Amino acid sequence: MKYFRMRPFLLALALLVPVARAQINSALLIDPNPDLKFPARNLDVTVPSHSTPLQGVLYLAEGNKPHPTALLLNGAGSEQNTDLAQTLRRAGWNILSVHPRGTAGVPGTYTPATAMEDAEAAYAFLQTNATTYFADPKKIVPLGYSEGATAALSLFAQNPQIPAVVLISLPTPAAPDAPKVAARPVLLFSAEDGSAPQTEALLLAIKPASPHSLHMHMRTDHNYATLRIALQSITVDWLARQFRPER
Image (cartoon, rainbow, N blue to C red; front, side, top):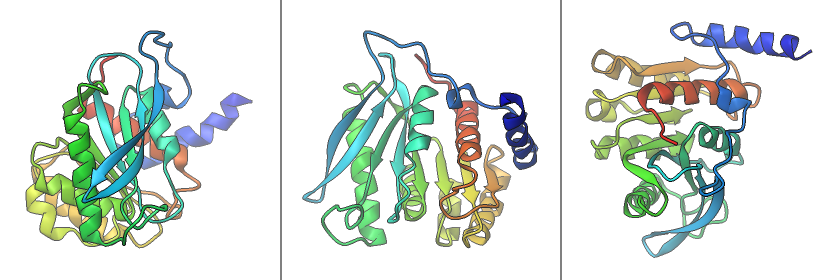
């Protein structure tokens, strides 16, 4: 029974990722052997941003070696991408998930400018607390969804030391940022939500200087509701090609 359930997924990956081997990343299916001394765990954290405390969740991977760390910047809607955070943690990543001002009950008013300020504050929080949370300060990767993708791209463009970025359903054109990000890897997702044109335009602008960048268009809705496993598998696999987590 399992075999027949897996076959459609393998076919979907083969169609979605013609440049990569169609495979199911073990982080989707297998819990790692527990590290009893330094176990995986969730921590509630407060990120100060312009006098506003941003409440966040830090998904800590097991082990006491420096981990690559994803800064998960969500949008204003209901999708929290917790499944993506959990899968990344099983693959050896830390994840800090935060919401900007004016979303998810956080005080203040949401604007692209304040969202960018909050992303900068979250990035600074990870840099400052890297030793405490076993984070590798040279391997902090913004992962933005919807409006969070706009903030993630701006953060990436303004901080050349950030090694890569993942953008899911970028809602606005990003051509002005292309020269600042062209030499670094970018993973882009779009869906049947109007995000494809600006996503493809950004890829075309950066691809000559960034051969590891990739755009995946998925035939699903803005929440990627029917392709969540594919979204996780492609993200984990692409990040594994850029970084090698230590346990």
